[in-house]
Image 1 (tube, helix red, strand yellow):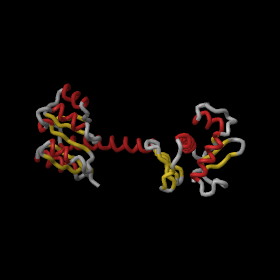
Image 2 (cartoon, helix red, strand yellow):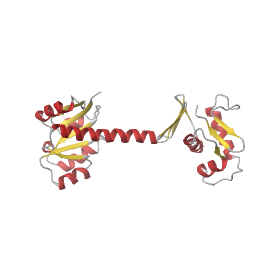
Image 3 (cartoon, helix red, strand yellow):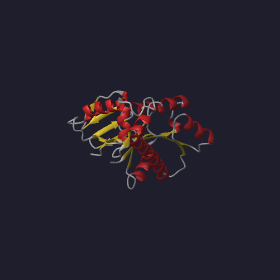
Image 4 (cartoon, one colour):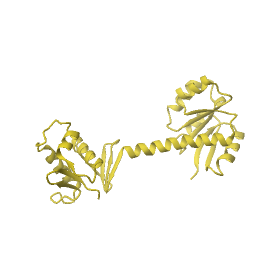
Length: 229
């Protein structure tokens, strides 16, 4: 599927970018005539924005800040011989790159693809960093949600923290002392039954048969293990 770039610019620019972007890089370009048109199109699916600086309204800083505040898409600006001050301003106002109009269309497309790749890789990394998957169990740290076989599981904050720690150590026998230190921050003693009570509650919510747990098992003399099933 081609990457899609929304462009505030002229038709000649679009034609040259299309020629450079489609054969090898599979990048498609759509032109708008004004900033208002661009803003009204942000609800569609785009991968990046390309702004020709002299097409911005007279209140360039205010308009650009407003644009940057309405989207998480990478914004690349093209300007006639941009000086250091303009480059710094664009970055300060929320842009991602300020390029010279003198660059070839192929170079511009390469910069755009690099920005799209950066954002895509970051988003993927962020999603991976905030989501744990153990078998049919899904833990979304950002949303503070747990699902088992696509069914939402309601947990208390402490149950959630306990499950997160075990999920991060899935397949490993985690000692009681370690769990208490990491989840309870040493607030309770290693002999406290609070851990066992919370394990029982998790089993009641996660196991098909809580009396014979297969997902959250006891490791005698050690602690507990979340099985990688």
